Length: 182
Image (cartoon, rainbow, N blue to C red; front, side, top):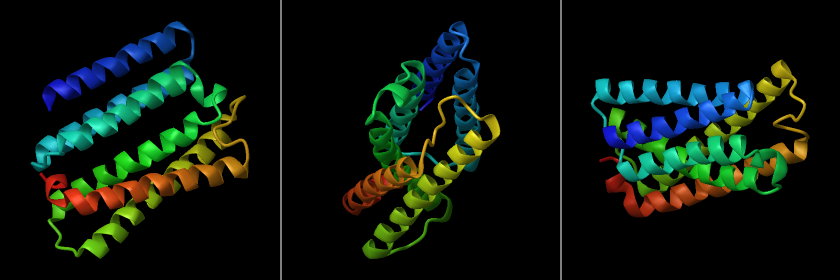
């Protein structure tokens, strides 16, 4: 866990430095916030005694690195018509499993396969909706030249991509539920 976290944070720090070198301070700040959030999560994980499954940890780390490096540093959010949608599918997949795993370790709930499926689906869709609300608030406050949400179609397609990723996570969890909690 420590080696993965150290490598992950180092990669993000290099991306922050690269963005700062290019005077893209808003993007650098975005990645710096991700570093702080991961450090806080790591502290929480250590203090609470939970241990995230390394496969889920790596999926989430890959999603965050892809967002930071390809999306922000290489600017694929602005130059690619499909990168954002692929990122939403992968992100909702990873973060649905992440949230499910953390919740199960904290509360150790007993649930049927059907309820687990619905629960993961609900978690993923809620996370996707909150992310879209965050993009809206960010665009409203900062008024960027290229907004995160240029129109309602973008929001709708993002939510559909979130649904696809969450469905993959819920289906996946049906087959690996014991491993998610360890």
